[in-house]
Length: 362
Ligand SMILES: C[S@@+](CC[C@H](N)C(=O)[O-])C[C@H]1O[C@@H](n2cnc3c(N)ncnc32)[C@H](O)[C@@H]1O
Image 1 (spheres, rainbow, N blue to C red):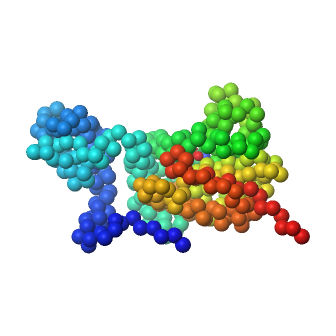
Image 2 (cartoon, rainbow, N blue to C red):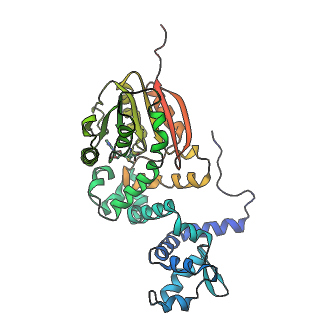
Image 3 (tube, rainbow, N blue to C red):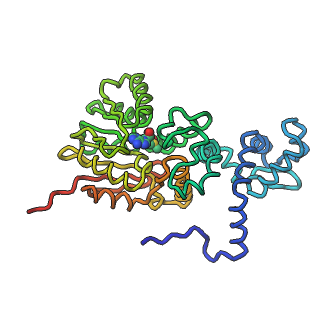
């Protein structure tokens, strides 16, 4: 059993009350800081450096009324995004991060454009274990059927969030993927084909089998065509939630990146069983995912844990960001054993390598 605590040592009751108010006002602070970023207030204040700008100076630009400046910047002040120095607003450190850090911006856009409105239904989604928040975008059983049709800006923010996390890890893991000199590689949950493109480009000796829902594979097929790599790839449109849907056999490497977190434990168990069946004699299953229990820094664990409500409310209703032990347990039940685990890949990925369990000697 693991121990984990996010509160600081010897936190006083008074400090805890302040933390509780930050929770109570979290949505308000989020919206105001986002407004200050998107509408250029933070940039204007940053441009003024340590001298900062008074409310009157900001209003004199004609971009914001004195009233709007007061409402928005006082909230930013309370959130340590700006500070007041002799009546002049100066950018504080958290404001600098909001203004310059791509991952913070990707997270804000994802939470606003994809999650925010839908989160109003979280209570019902949790009770039903169904993605009831998805109705704000369309009538799909899970977000994955609707991905290619999501309205903007939700679609762009969803893909930016998904790609930002995995893109930074793909170059780093290719040596792991090729470590056993595979010939037949299967990318399950291939999405827009980013991993498949990277693998095919880096290794002329492999063939790729892409598995995903039809809508996603159409996009991936186009990307492969454009890159001149289509002949070395086979597309397998498959809904893996159908337990009868088989996977193509005789694979040397089965690659799943940020894929199993889309499913319930029962579905993961079934997918891993089919993956184990699809392995060739010396084949391995490589799972790259974001496990909140394997993070070096609490900041990453915090972001990952707080992505799970999206999985409930919008993605599938019964999936989440898992602990690594959950996958290991389900893989073992599917006849696989953990060979290696490597952490600190990209922002927050770990790579779990599994092989088929050796048959017990008679
Ligand atoms: C979070 S994305 C990960 C994409 C990519 N592997 C990466 O690392 O960026 C999950 C992918 O799983 C696919 N997927 C979700 N449910 C599926 C299902 N029932 N059958 C097949 N693919 C599914 C989605 O379409 C999507 O492409």
